[in-house]
Image (cartoon, rainbow, N blue to C red; front, top):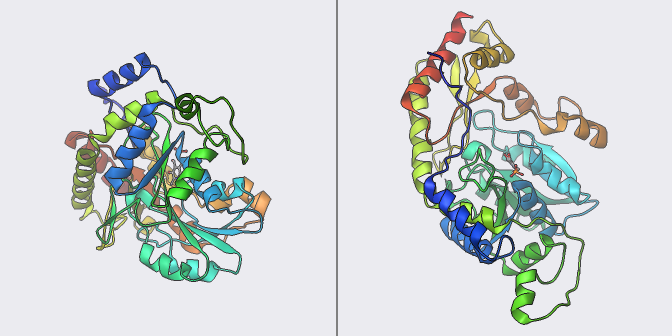
Length: 382
Ligand SMILES: Cc1ncc(COP(=O)(O)O)c(C=O)c1O
């Protein structure tokens, strides 16, 4: 019997999700309707934030955050070297300059000592990426930012439900961005949300997602007016009601999914404890990890294969391993636009050669997880 491939991440859609989407399709509002604010309220409440602004991707959420903080040409934004490119692209969209900080080798979180060295008089924001689902060291970042006009943006796309010193991600930074892509904790197909406690910034981000126009279709219908003003250059970053309906329905299962992800991670940790060439990333004791990703480091000195051969071995066995991520500044665009070169962030470059992301999603079965661990263990014989 051939084994079904095991992806690294997978969404879970049930009949209630489908019914919720069908209801939205039959309603009067396919977009800019009541489900948008319902989803914003529900997700903000889950995370403990005052305001949620729904947008059509995590990337749009980060872009809205950068605009809300009025970052522009001449401004520098510090971003960890190991993240998805969207974390730094957001600053580039607004003409800002991304400055890359190194990461902690054991967690791949932004290294606060490196951030300290990268701060200049032009630094306007730090993007704290909650890599893999573990919150960055927000208190240390806040201490560095304090009194210097530097704001903290959480790229919390990996971390809804994670906690830092008992505070939930989404309530710690000035603005926090989330993604609802299908591999994430909950999905709206594509989608994202910005959370903040600042109502004025939230209002500006709602305007930004709607072309920079001071009202939307529904509010004009309510007030019986046809005129509107476009007060800034915005975008169409709106998240339709159909997708918000899916998000609201998915949210009911988020706590359960977080428990599942943590149980799967604990089981991986236990099974890898006596595999000498596997070092799972670690979680700081003052945080809980939402485990969007389960990432291991291969001790290549103990193996005859490199990461490429290890990846190929897993792939040939039907395991959808992945690599999150190459240092962003090594992408052609960043080298060409900003002149970045190898050697900028030594930890990021070294650890990147050792990492593999293994399958992690709430419906991963124990049998499939056992098979993944067995296949990783085989690397010592290659
Ligand atoms: C850390 C991080 N930031 C931002 C994004 C962008 O999210 P989206 O794909 O929803 O635009 C992602 C998505 O993979 C991500 O992993």
